[in-house]
Image (cartoon, rainbow, N blue to C red; front, side):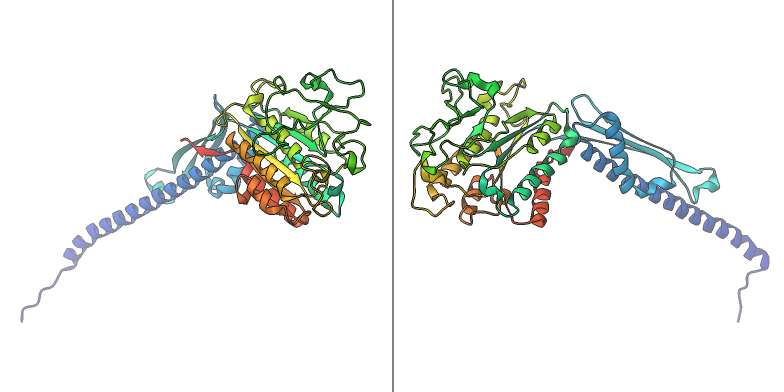
Length: 422
């Protein structure tokens, strides 16, 4: 039998090219690994840059320095690979028009390509984000009646206000943000500086409150609307003059000592005003809500002070009402419908239906309504849910834990609508 054999010389001749081929395969695999690592680093950097720019689009009132600092923290928390990079740079800039641009670049050290003199590979990513709306008009309508002092309702309610204001404090000074605080009891204090809205000259003892200005509109004999004071001026409410609540034993309707604050982009002013709130009276839900409507109604542009406020188009500024109440009142037993058939502090269904009627008209102006009920009336939730822009925008708060949860949900809804544009 013939046998084939390979000599040592022949074996060596074969082994050399095989070794070269194997080395080439290893180098190619190594290079592919480095490129895969670079792709992973670039993808992580892009995701972190997108997150930073989206957050930046929500910081309308931050200075350029604050913007860079806050977005750098976001990038650090979401881009762990940064620590291993050389020549790393990060920039965040507010572009003309308000968009936020973020750029991340650096050089990733290689593991295998160094054998051919490539010690690192560069990458560069960028992201740009914009707010879906140019700004926000927020009205805080706050029930400061006597019943809000029951149990811990007052602390919960004022805590809601404080948390909301603190959350938007970074926007202070931003001309696309306006906040208005409207305390209400039986009446709303528009402020003595607005005496030009009155039907007659302001009485010498006028403290800034006005009567509800009721009229029949086909649905209610005591309806309220957003008509301007130039066409329908208001009548002054003054202490010690008999008002609609005479049978309630008050002698005159209660009106908060703290007048309407705002619209303003100085959040500190609004926080200071909330610290002066006190309790009194039995309360008119409709009076508090209709003044929130007037504070946001496009009809009222130029009436509140700031130029261009309120906006006539919600694409310019989003319009939001946060209405805080316990749903308890005796006012409707003694004025408006004068229904005495219901229990103490429990208004009849018709009073709630009137509130919903106002809310429905506000929604036609693209005003978003969030209802927060602090403890209180168990008959109110169906109506408050109908008043809110959606049932999910109604919150029932009974304790501090629920307050914190409610605030978190409202805060999420309040965030500017942002999107990536690049």
